[in-house]
Length: 273
Image 1 (spheres, rainbow, N blue to C red):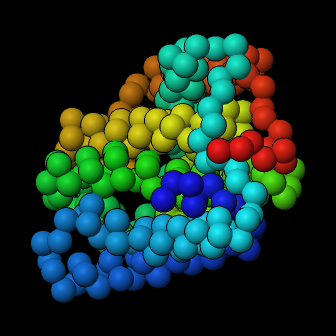
Image 2 (tube, rainbow, N blue to C red; image 1 turned 180 degrees about the vertical axis):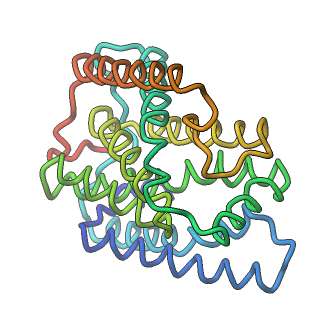
């Protein structure tokens, strides 16, 4: 089945269609939740993503049968860095970015009703269910669609910065709520840039998993803290701004190192699977 996916390279319009299929899947998942009150969160999440996955597989198979050119979803190259070195630096960059963009969550006030839904999803779900849906399925499936399919397809049709921006916007839009949109967009820019530089889907899955796992861990360490509470509300002001400045410097340095040590592929040449 993987070979079929390599043949489907969605355009911007095709990427919007994938997002529409995710939204349609979310309605089906909501119906399952309404009919089955105890439905695992991981099951309803998989149902949400299933229509888009099936569509990619069907079009990929049709492309394979029609002789369309193949472009590997995952063809990693890490430049001058060893694999472990790249993952370490990129992981630190994601942690620094997560700290820097945290205040954007509060730019749009979250209604108490929505806050209660988020807190229920994080705290009332069994730990295993939360780990499967948030730390495993979300990184795997969202990165497959947003970077492996959408970004890969758009990189063959437009300039890299534009493809990365569009894939990040669609990634943010796909979360279906304005409170996650800004941080999701900014994280999408980093993960999209990493995919462009390395053509490594596992690298972006790792970054996504790292971010979600840290959020899950913190929600369990401090179960009484509201979902819209940030480090600025927890740390003393002087310590918070010292850490904020340090994270900004660290992120810039890490991006410069990664840019220097890696060389982006010419995706337009269609790396063969």
